[in-house]
Image 1 (cartoon, helix red, strand yellow):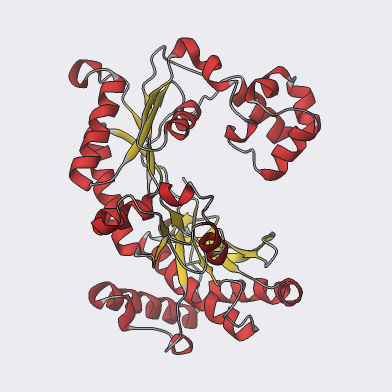
Image 2: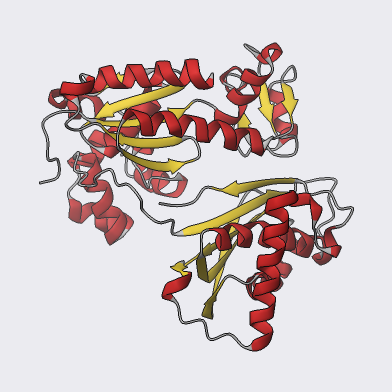
Length: 402
């Protein structure tokens, strides 16, 4: 069975233009005005700015051309983190089964709560009201029988809306939507489908699974065929461990040197922050992934798996530097506007046989001591010498995968 209930009882709750909404909440002068978070690269845009075509990850210069009267504000990640915690407290007080997807969205399973809390759509309405009154932020909720449909519903209902997909009209709701609404359909996959005259979810559903596999490959073909036919067996899960920890830094197209020394400083800053989170979670990583975006907005991903899973900054920085070194010829030719790092193949530290040499033990102990000092006195109290006096730029934590 792909759907185990006849009632739409999965909620997908998604904060609207999260970073920009926090800025508008904290500065009432910004309410109703187009707001852009991030100058070099757009990290978030209010719906007033989106109406002019401003999009996330767009170069700041282009965003200001589209919306010259926008208010541009620097990101405040501590404020966003605090807001996220407050919202998730409401989620967890609403229902016992909450699966966080990112800093600003979650699935909530309200199965079996009708007697004590009312119908799922009533629960969703109260949740929206609480987030608005207690946290001061707009949030959209989609309600459906499956996670996929609930997420699609919240996307359709934005901004600041509530949409219930009744079980009897699921395909009626789903099939007219563009193929881009299917999870896993990015630009390349959409182009392949469009080239064959397939533009809607219903048209994907009408194609045989075998034909989709021939177009897109076995995994993608089977995945899209299932979703287009409203088959999604996944349950809302609590307590799933993250599969990766990462961060990225936008460095813009102008005004920043792209010399190897500068890019190495970017790596050092990212590794410092990411490995601190890794150690706090008592995890170790075996694979380092480097993501680069070039001046023409194309991207490349490179990865390196080390022999022994580690939480040491020195070891993981060495792997990141090796990946960067191999990419330098491409960077020299095509420029670089963003550097991202992810640590994957994570394991619990207690489950791994840590056969460290003496110098490695000392290095890990030093990392832990620095973590403790920063936790007690603040992140800026200790920094690497290479980063002293340097502009940290716009650094953004990558949301942990579930």
